[in-house]
Length: 204
Ligand SMILES: C[S@@+](CC[C@H](N)C(=O)[O-])C[C@H]1O[C@@H](n2cnc3c(N)ncnc32)[C@H](O)[C@@H]1O
Image 1 (tube, rainbow, N blue to C red):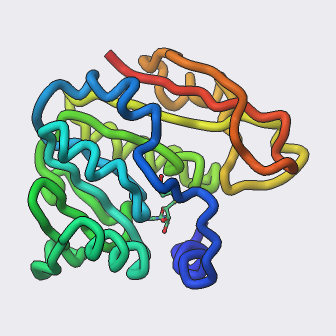
Image 2: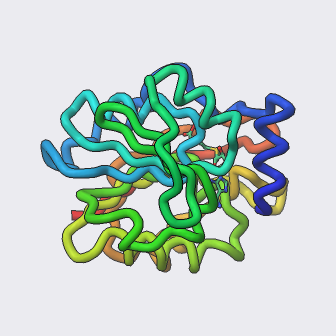
């Protein structure tokens, strides 16, 4: 999806993906990140998951395109704009850093070492053509030791386009062969996506 699609989605209030509290898969499986270290939340929107990670003792690092999402996060979590960081504008507060800009411009040097990645409504938000580059960069950011917690949807892609896009088990296996399926349940998506499932994967 082009950046304008998401900028416009925030400006027109199309934010059905936003949750008013932490996503339940994060408390359920977040122990895989260990007790400390930075956890990266790509395409973070205005998620409460950053605050949950901070409250567990992690440094939560997000990246997000939309200035509106950043403004909401900054006000709620007490983040201050602290200047430029490469091609990004940096917002910081205790235990949380958010970079405003395009994920695809990130590098391991700009992000620094991370203990893991929490990918919710992020991989599924990208057009299928963007997936290979997206995951290749995630691998570079994770390095050898970082862990992945991934939440995706699967439904009949012939019925409708995304976002969220469908990622069936074979697609996830091609992108993340080392990831294990840890949960599967009916997905809470609008009727035109049904029947749909949510699957949660993690690496060791
Ligand atoms: C479906 S929303 C999910 C937000 C968040 N993960 C959550 O759980 O609420 C996808 C988000 O990714 C952002 N986004 C899309 N493409 C991006 C990119 N290339 N770089 C940074 N953010 C991006 C959008 O602005 C949007 O806020």
